Amino acid sequence: MNRRTPRLFAATLAVAALALGACAEKADDKPSTGTAAAAYPVTVGALTLDKRPEKIVVLSPTATEMLFAIGAGPQVTAVDDQSNYPADVPKTDLSAFQPNAEAIAGKNPDLVVLSDDRNKVVEQLTKLKIPVYQTPAATTLDDSYRQITELGTLTGHADQAADVTTRMKDDIAKLVKDLPQRAEKLTFFHELGPELYTATSKTFIGSLYSQAGLTNIADPADADGKNFGYPQLSQESVLKADPDFIFLGDVRQAKQSAALVKARSGWAGLTAVKNDRVIELDDDIASRWGPRVVDLLRVIIDAVAKVPA
Image (cartoon, rainbow, N blue to C red):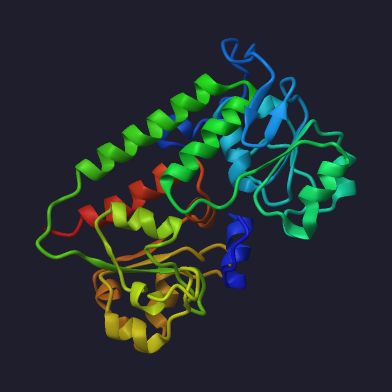
């Protein structure tokens, strides 16, 4: 997605980069005999494929996870340098931040899947007659479901894609159903970096916290939308808001931890710190919008459920 976000969050999204429980966590690395013979040509938006792609190059960690989750892994021949899940993905030095059309074309792809159209790479690949499908960063869960569905159509795995989205929806519904009812919502701060960049409820990650029944202390900081949902808070505003939870999405990249948060000037007195509610997240899962969002929501809801209603 062509969106303007703080540099820190953009880096987090690419390195990571808002599983599928025990089910989607195990990527299906074998093509389905039921969907492999899907009828072609197929069309998604303006893109039409005359035959099933067998050499897919992926420049998006999230799209990589989606493709392997739906059973299209054997068709993926190269992924970008930030794709790291599943562990056996065909990782290369291709960059999603600075995509090079010639380097991509050198992999002889019959389909390229990417998130952002950086360096006008889509136009360049189109001139080389290489089909391109974009998976822009999701803003809602429906965006995730749609991308998984469309990738299933393009790769000949429509049935498996439908299974993945159904399981995601079912698992999320079960998680939300078990939430305790509260007279007053708990509050939280989601940290994208120690500079206190964060995400509001209008973002994908923010929408997941809303599913968990939490109130985002960052929402007032971007009420006008000028920061596109990713404002930078001051330390004073965080201390004043005194959130019930602090979720760290910068554990691996910025080496943050609950102990370091407690050591920040004035933070030891925060409700979240005093009650051991500083939750260290997996950076990758917390910044991607693929099937493992179920795992992220489970971590959030498990934390919330531990607080007496």
